Amino acid sequence: MTPISLEALAARVNDGALIALPPDDSLSSGALVRAIVRRGVKHLRLIGVPTTGYAADLLIGAGCADVIETAAMSLGEAGTGPRFAAAIAAGTIRVLDATCPAIHTALQAAEKGVPFMPLRGVLGSDVLGHRPDWHVIANPFASDDDPILLLPAITPDFALFHASCADEEGNVWVGRRRELATMAHAARASLVTVERIVKGRLLDDERLAAGVISAVYVDAIAVAERGAWPSGLLDEYDSDRAHIAAYARAARTQAGFAEYLAQFVTAQPERTAA
Image 1 (cartoon, helix red, strand yellow):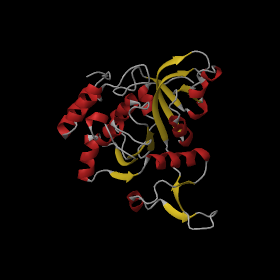
Image 2: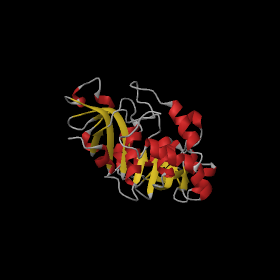
Image 3: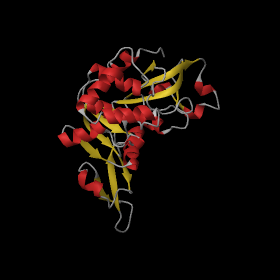
Image 4: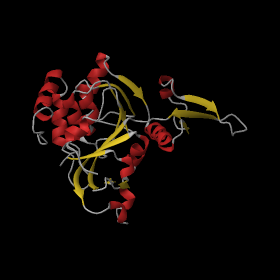
């Protein structure tokens, strides 16, 4: 698989697409999200798998997203995403409340090619009252009263994530972050940024193969050094907590967020340090 440019990768994301984003600490691609913002994509529907933070907050603040389904929105010690909170207050974002197991289960349904999957843990919670698309039925295999929740499959148009490396065939190594494999299997297409392309075939190495997402599930790759920034990447570099805190302060106001975009998103070449 021949890598393409970061901007060409972002160009594959169309208006109105349903995109799956991993948590900030689980191979999120800040570089790709910023490239999508630069394109001015609109009406995206976001899924935090199962939570999200900087990436989704940036897309929401830039006016790229109308809907988000997630179990949580967090910038870690920097608090809730400020543009997310502002959009809720303004009524410009629709939030579908979910739980971590619910999102994983719905993605597993798409991964397996079935229309829904059962789950128990949400029963009895207030979340059910806000999700008319979730249905409780009687367990057809039980002889007594046994309600079970059915969740519709989530099939993202795109799974977006960053990894340390891919090989020349397009196999991507994500280490023990196997939830990304579920995300990639469930999505119609996976768009991946990597630090580097390595020679050989990752699946041929017994030590690495278990942490590889096959090229069968990867549609396009772009090389983006420090592409996870301001998030960290496995044992390669740490999260830039100072920058995330600075972002959280700036993004409390629309003017501060606009200044952030001008300095770190729309500026060319892309800046990756505060």
